Image 1 (cartoon, helix red, strand yellow):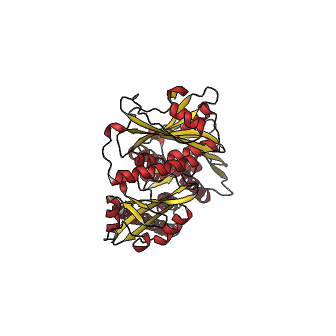
Image 2: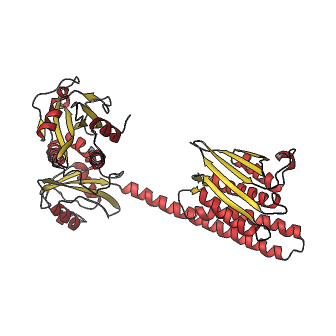
Image 3: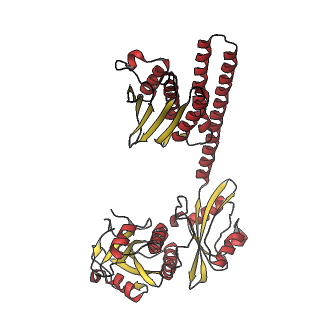
Length: 478
């Protein structure tokens, strides 16, 4: 299915800010669908043929849908959707008095023109299923009244409000709770869910007929935003309850007619978030302490190595220190991020920098570099992989350049379901008869064991003119 931007560009020739305007509307038009008990369709028009194309669709949570199939991308001749065509031509809201039976159910249609820069760039239709109509309750009448006011604001270009964040996963919806307030902040109507939310905050008296200033915990900000005709999102907490509120000012020709306050109680959600934050902080602290403990062990091994007289023993302890430092580096990274995922590119670069200092020098000038990207990896993959990279780099430095310097390059390639890692050097290379299973030293044996048993991957070592190539392939979750 084509995106809204592709449909608008291809079918109506609209570009840039005009497309952005339509995308902002579709990011916040669920509230209009719910208040209207209606399906919403957005149409653009071909400037040459006047054909109408559905570029977006929204179904209500508060009523049965009219269109069970997806109409996005469907094109209609101008005379097949006369209400939409009239809204484009007359540049005003068109309400048809006749009921439409073309979909098999009685549908009342209203077409709302969308203005931009002196032109009508789209039309939104409200299509209500009349087969379920009954005597409306006070709540439904309030919904429909507010829906009419929002429709007029949409036709004036006053809704949605500029600058609001379109990504509101927790934003209260119409069914969560609703207050209808007048321009002075007096509550005209409150839905049962809204009353329950305020009672959780400690407001036990009836809120209808009272001003927000008498009981709301953030009344000054709300009343100020209402007077200015500006939207407001806020969160209040009292008596252990947490309530999200969203104020939508209702205006007509820049005059404030009142406001719609959507409220949602999120007490349990916030409690779980706090528990997760505590858990994340605990995990980060554990990683920090593990890193410190590993660094302490490495320091003790360094002190021990100074007391040894055997070069072989000192070299063995130095290798152990480097392995411990590689693991500590991963835990240090995890202590800074609560997601238990690591940007392995940063870990690999820090490993290269650390080993370049400890393994190379003026008398052994080996340069190390990093190419490509591995992206983010889970901690259970990053920890053994860091140790593998450390072993491969250390092995290359020690065995590829016995009497000269050279270049070692770590190449990372992230694919859809696997990670490919190569360690290339331009050293002497392995012999033609060399095999990993028979001739590998301790470092390569450790690397092969980690790759196969911990990571479920494969490790190959082969001659690569010039030098040697160590190729690692790891399966990753898609």
